[in-house]
Amino acid sequence: MSDTPIAEAPIRQLSAPELKALIESGTPVELVDVRTDEERALAWIDGSRLLDQAYHEALLRMDRNTPIVFQCHHEVRRQQAAEYFRREGFRNLSNLQGGIDAWSRLVDASVPRD
Image (cartoon, rainbow, N blue to C red; front, side, top):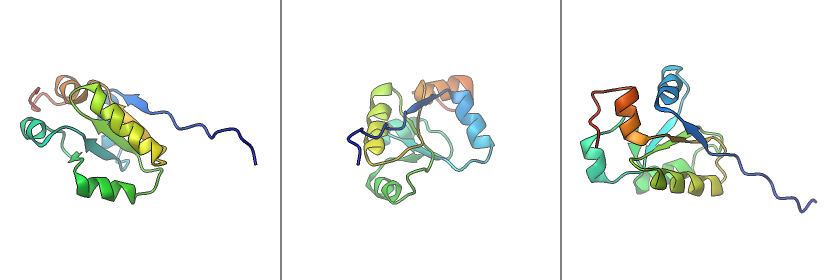
């Protein structure tokens, strides 16, 4: 057995147009919203789910190769969530660059900018 640590999978940064293309391709992806209930009530991306306790537990039961994209308003929460799931063994993790604001500006102007 080697003492060499196994390299962790990188957390990719997806632009809003890249995420839109991924969704439109039909690739199954978990779009995880790590904002608060109050923030989500103002604006959300169709198909996303709020990371509550039930969804957290459901994600932990998924295959570790499941594509997961985290989004919030500011980078800190989505990066923390991605790091947590990487420590749990997930290998196909991404963050939405610019969060809900970028989605509104670049993909779907009907989504309010919070």
